[in-house]
Length: 213
Image (cartoon, rainbow, N blue to C red; front, top):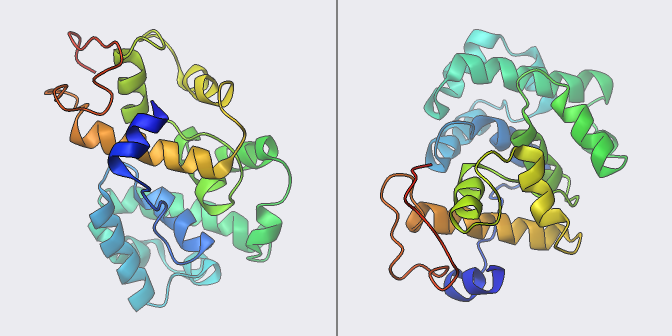
């Protein structure tokens, strides 16, 4: 399936961001919105000289919410972003290398313990910002996997994640590319309400789309 997706779409060059810190911020801001809105919010942070852990920590929540407004749910995301960045600034003196130290499981637990950082966001930060091998799964991944009969609809986040990690080399670049390709095919073909199976790069694999996801 990976080969079929890569042959059709080519490299996706994820995750867009100039620095690991920008990637980390983007992982929080992209919750429940599209990437173009996140790009606008990050551009606002740069313009306001707020794309810095200490600047965000010291910024008033109301001011931060106004700056990231294009990302949507801005009051909630301002709190979540401050929760994450305050840990980096206060516990690690803003040192991302120290924050990202330790093994994958330790870093995942550290991130997931922060209020507002769920498992998907934590895995996105571990993979895309820290460059460590953890497979990121999301609604697109779940939909594609279930429709192709690789897991039951009752499967949870952990089962979905292990499906990939148990059957692929522990290679962060492979995990990066595979997740990006699944998002691409999920957006373009394996849609929630109106899947386009004809012409899909995964059309040759057994699939069933009677139930909506």
